[in-house]
Length: 96
Image (cartoon, rainbow, N blue to C red; front, side, top):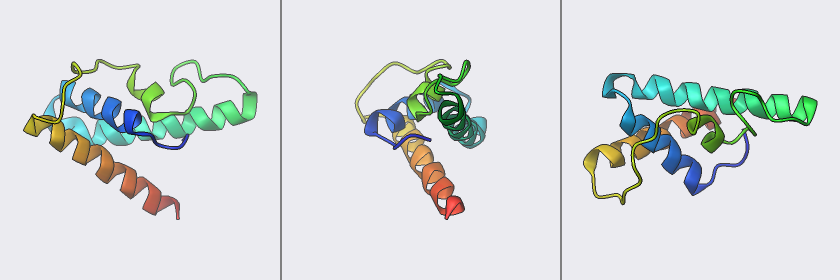
């Protein structure tokens, strides 16, 4: 996966916000896995992955429905941001 930027976390959280709450963690892990697979594809072929793009979390997220942009005023949005950050930490720990 490409280095994580704030926009990656925000876009992934917007996807989770648009999804049913009971499947959000699983969906987040799936997007991270897709970003990883896309990065491997890009490194091997020099071309974007046809489904998941350039290996960024944003690219994997933007293949799905995103909730509208908003500030951090909503509890649900903040919980989705927390889920994304927790999953990214879990992913990083598992890699090392």
